[in-house]
Length: 290
Image (spheres, rainbow, N blue to C red):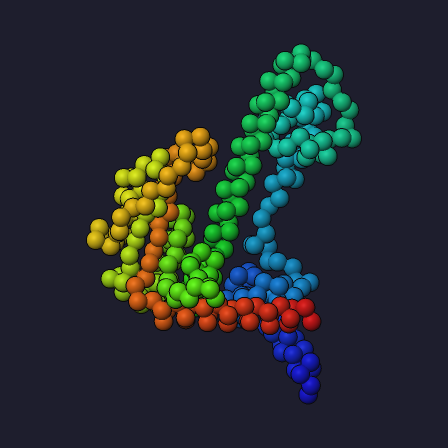
């Protein structure tokens, strides 16, 4: 049997299992976890042509909105009024009701402008609700994370945001800098997975001099749970009074620098793991293209 024939046989065998699970009523995520197939493109290829179970389908809210928009249009409402009532965009309303007769103008331009502003505010509120709902659904889809998954995430996170040795400056030290509390939490969880002792960690706060330094120090100390002795002197970034900074306000806490002492061996493991991820991704990409 040739290599190509073998790959085809393996794919068909895996597809048969995936289809069987789909027909039992499992979701894509459940099939992924059951078959240990974590490549989304491969999953979709395995399930191509198989309809989703009814319980995974979400109702299309826009069907109800469309019917309501047409009803309001027939009552003589303008796009602005319908937008205020339903909180959907005027472009969608236009598509839904363009075949219906246009109502007569009954308001002044000032009144129409006021209604338009209220409609825009309703649209912004709707978009914000949709944005939050989408984030919540995405968060729920992650589910539990295995140690291997956390390890791979941590390697990628460090290689994107951590310090790296350069050909012109060999420096094999693990130093991670970020302003995002979530990024710092994941990095610290990753270090604990690798059994890096807390005693090897050192922290430094970097913040603009115009920020609330004390609040930032307290925030990062609470997030890390580290003793005061683990924190070095805070670094203040000076800038011109004319500088128009955007990263300001009560939520500005600067950046936290996390350094791991005696970390040359850890750094080499990170670098080697990253090379392994790149190679594995390239191989998976080639398989997905064929």
